[in-house]
Image: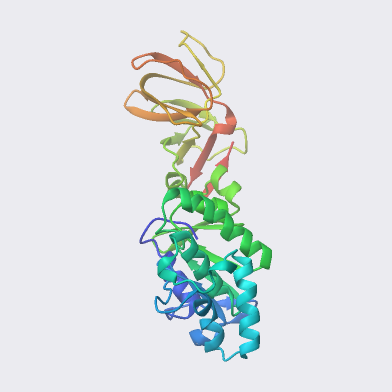
Length: 322
């Protein structure tokens, strides 16, 4: 579950966990209505952002805590803890004080503790939010690998799209208490279902427009045509121009070829794996990106050619791809 802070991700997670009661509707798991089932009888596991490890217990006892609460036999507890230590690659840390562990090691212990009782569903609420970027990049892959290895279904909450793309098989993008799109990470990124999803994923070029009698979209920066089914003439739409640059040239008087945008270069910024180009046309500023070198200067007047695959249009309640 992906979305900005305050959009309802954690509330939804707490509803699934049984820590909150829904005002309406039902919560189903594996076809069964769980709405009235107490939290402790749902057999769901939960891992929090702050890990919530017990500082007075060592690693072994932290992992064993849930098993003891379930009154498992000591022999079974010992075997399961050993299995979890092997899974998270911390066998030699079993008797360590959790306070002596690094943030990444504590995160793995918290994951092992949540997994030890073999819950039917694991819920993770911003589990990497307290860690620095480099550590998060490594651990998000580790978390996915562990969950895949044991075949555990998980609901994972984050506001970080990179984390969501790395971990999730399916994304639910939330906004103001509602889910705006459910899709694979690839589909979500390449075909955002609403203007909100597009903005949240970092797309900048969202332009209001009106559909004319020939199904072209009139905007403040020019006319654009999609290649799929015709749009309703006179309807108001929002046009998304994806930032990938197909070709750059110089403005030519009277050119009637491919769709293009003429503008003045505001800024060129090198971002490591790609470069960004900010372009102003009329009163509209647009953002484009390329993996190549942009040998441009601020103040240059250029033409950016637009291919149909860059265009996506949002009608009321629907989305069209070119």
